[in-house]
Length: 215
Ligand code: DX5
Ligand code: ZN
Image 1 (spheres, protein in one colour):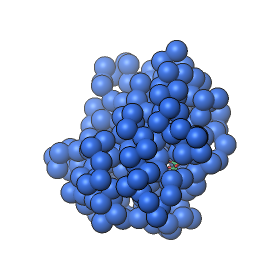
Image 2 (image 1 turned 90 degrees about the vertical axis):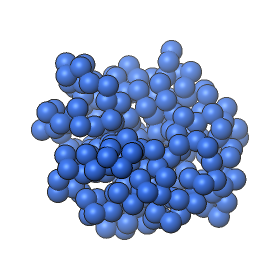
Image 3 (image 1 turned 45 degrees about the vertical axis):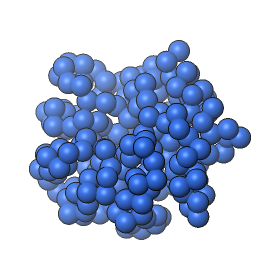
């Protein structure tokens, strides 16, 4: 069970200090948005590289961008240990996953809430992680969508059947209230943005979330 806090709701004017507040994080989740794939804009590879240099915690890049086929490799070069592209924004997901792995990072594919997992069953072995969005991507602080829980269960069953080591990540509305539902359905990597950065002690929240997921 791994906790990957998202810095989307952190203070962007002090990202180095914000990342230093969560030493217990397994990964730092960096949300890259281009104002086209989602109606919000964050940062690109130069900023991600600066964040990577500021911490020893590995970076988990979540690319909410068009043209992922062309742009994703730059995030491996920026120092991310894991790079997630959206299947809805990728023309050749198998080729892209292989390219990310060949460059030395974990390859991961994200699905929006209404995108089915079934068409991708045969490519699970090409992926180190699948991210199932539990809100529509674009903003932090949205309400967890329970309607994704059956898809989490189906994805877990598919992974078990295929015998792959692929991690199953959830992102959106994950909190002390919702994390047990996700874990029970089969998720093992949890992104939490506002739950962590709105806590008085963000690092204690990271550990509390992990404890809840394990229980
Ligand atoms: C939303 C982003 C999330 C976001 C999660 O599109 O992908 O990573 O930061 O924030 P919370 O945990 O507040 O829903
Ligand atoms: Zn995200």
